[in-house]
Image (cartoon, rainbow, N blue to C red; front, side, top):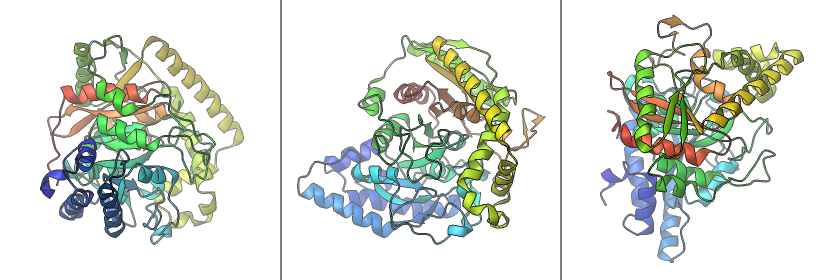
Length: 471
């Protein structure tokens, strides 16, 4: 098969071609390395290319095929790993000048699982310093640009992974999500990002192993690939105190089999707080949600307001910032000003403030729980705005209203994170400018297969095509 075609195929199709000996793992890898060489200089999504180790892995898979061995589900499929996730023998910088030349000696648990599933680690994808930011830019590698418009942001903090997917440089991208770091980049770049139930994907190493708002998760170009990738990531691990096994046998099979939503109750919330949503984003997301009625879902537009959780999230985020960077509090002058400012705010938080934030968080969770007694899924816009200029740290206004703080623009996602709920972002169509818009699908704990099944039908109804700068 011609190299040029392979980099645009879904991961599941690549895995099938490898199993059926219709494409070799080396061919698949070289097609993606060529795509990175062509496109990455202008997008800057893949910051470390691990060509030599990836070729060695691809050749090992090829040898296993020649021996007639049974292959794991993602054998020969390239994957990009976020540059905050340790990879043995491959530079991992956390986007920080403090670790610009750091090469780990051991894989993170999620990377080890992906390797056992047969994935070929092709390289590391860009992130803001220590994944703290909604625009993917750092002092080590610079800014990642959106493949739909190179003047615009890919969002963050898994912006490198999202842009690499949209630009056809990788078929799968691993990432993390605290306030929306898998979902907002997915929205900006027109791909699928899944925030997982806490503990479902083991976080090791982790400075705060009991922290349940920051999770690892999959990102792919469509929902079925995302489900296949999720299956490879999950599983009980003794390395994480929060680790839990999935409550399903095979998420991919559930998503692949889903052809309707009969009996599914969906609540569509135009916004989750009071920051507003741009009119075009709101229109496209509402149309996508109501369109699910043709698949048998009962869709009801609802008004919800979790805006009183904003201060609680900011307080608990500050606590986590200090916890994660305790060893670096004497080096704030060399950190990104955005990150350093977050740590300073966290250092000002007192125990009483943390206690009040936890009480509010509990209240917010119970309000979400009550919603899920009425609805199986709650849908809402992922990001309230379209992608903004890459030179900006964040958008300055939403629907004509100026923002009070830089973090308010991700309220749509962090008000979900506050309750530690799973959520997916799926493209809901394209704006008049041609830019993609993401629809967020929220569910109760362990509803990931249902989230992705719903996402599959949304993307089927509202295909967006390839980004103009895809390889």
